[in-house]
Image (cartoon, rainbow, N blue to C red; front, top):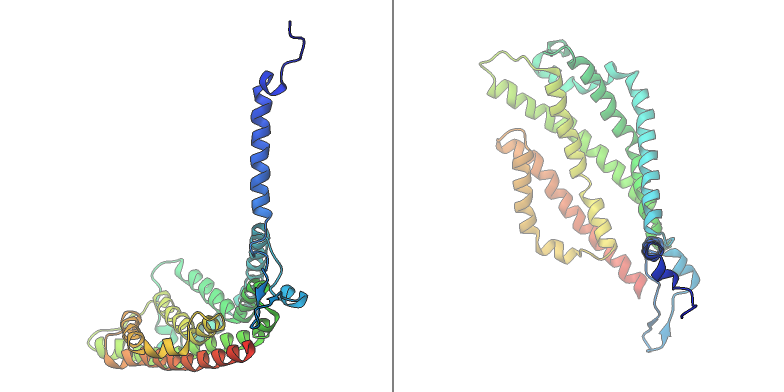
Length: 304
């Protein structure tokens, strides 16, 4: 007769299953808590001797954040941006009529005054005030939003790469505003005059206020985004993903792509409108080549 007690795992299979599930949960938890940035392995220098990064260089790589920490940081930056936009929206709401009059100046010069704009649905005026306040808030808080973007990606950069924070913020903000101003003072007046006075010469214009505003926002934000091209190329060049030689070699393909994009986003099909959209994009592409060359030269000097 066997007096030994039965094995606990055999006598109670539920405990065995529970233990297995706990082990799986621990493995998943360890994977989530493991750093996304792998440990820095030593490498050989020019003389073939093992070389390791010093403490400052390892710290300059940024905090070794886990996946959950990255999500928490992203949530924090989005929350800060939303709070900033909300505060700016409340401020712009108090000036909604003044802001709309400024935005309506291009169409007012064409149709003979802001009072010529109409609305069809009872909810359209309220929708216009909401959109005017929101778009103005986006432009007003664009430096703060870009700062949040930078603070999210900065932990993954070296300290020598973080010195580009202020130039990044200033240039990106200046280019975005410049693109919006270029669209407001150059593209919009020409496009509206062509569409209404030329194509619509035999008709009586009855322009919907909300339709005009949607049309204007599309052009302003679109041109502001296009003006970000040098900043994007600068970042790609900083990480060695593109080179000035590559950009210049593929200039003809880029030019063809620019013409296609300009033809798609242009509000009219005339040559002048196509030139107004494609001209700045070609100029920005050439400026981007120069920016890429500057960053490549700086990177080569720092690695020597």
